[in-house]
Image 1 (cartoon, one colour):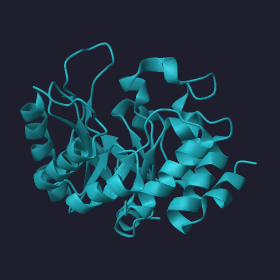
Image 2: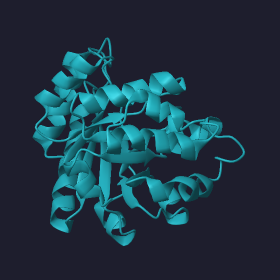
Image 3: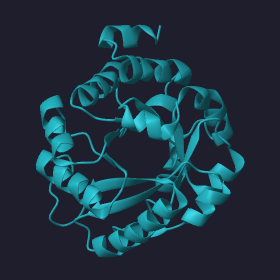
Image 4: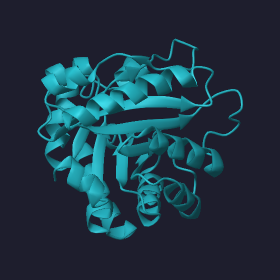
Length: 252
């Protein structure tokens, strides 16, 4: 499905593969270390892949490309994602969307918001969707999954002008529904760290029932022993509103 339509219809499944910048090579095994293996295995059944520029240049997904414009490594303590690509790069790569991270609550918040604001304006002129990765992080953030703080971060992304927002799951369907209610732009759940099959798919089910526009998932899919089957399970829930039991049966 075309990315913009998938978001509008609240049936969007995006695969995140920016972890090589964020975490280094430790997230990958022998098969997944080459990003082309992941992209080739999953892009026909996803609405988009979120990639950094260097990976986008070598692993060309058959679905939409969401180019990540910001990044940081785990070796840097500074709570800031720096500009690492541009909307012009996105145009050259024929990307359907761009994504930029803002750490709401960081001492560097204003710098990230300033870059995001410029990128949003450039994306609008280019006819490209913008996605805000709105994550609460900073000295005043005691719990990055606190529903009130996640709602604040999501609302800030909408206020900036992002077309859609990716943010943390808050731990329950009801609390995530309040995040969705607080944000007048479509909200997508960030997949987060590796969880058991049942726990991960239960979370996907909860966020969709809470009114989310979809999910942006990575390690829980491509780190799975059968990545294509896990993606099929996610699609069952997001695109077909299937019960958890039906989704779990995809993994057998």
